Image 1 (cartoon, helix red, strand yellow):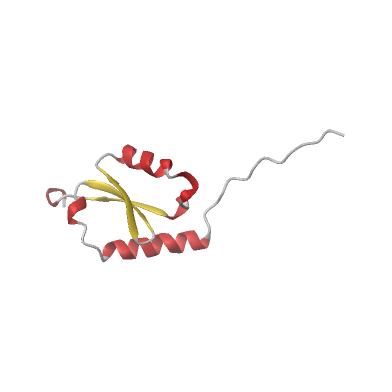
Image 2 (cartoon, rainbow, N blue to C red; image 1 turned 180 degrees about the horizontal axis):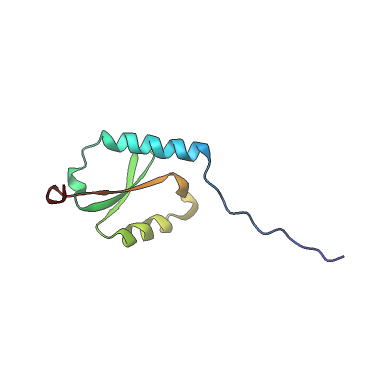
Length: 85
């Protein structure tokens, strides 16, 4: 008999992950983000974990965190400058 192995399943987003993202979005709305104008920010829980002007660089920083955080719970948002509103 040939032994086969099941491929590893990809992690999927859970309801708890979704609620954590919504909590992060609500938390973000209560913060003074003036120092982040014209930057992309990454929020995990109630903490800004990275901020960059270049979106690709921000994602590199998030990827570098690897499994140390739940990647499904990272909220990424752009904070426009006053001249972009």
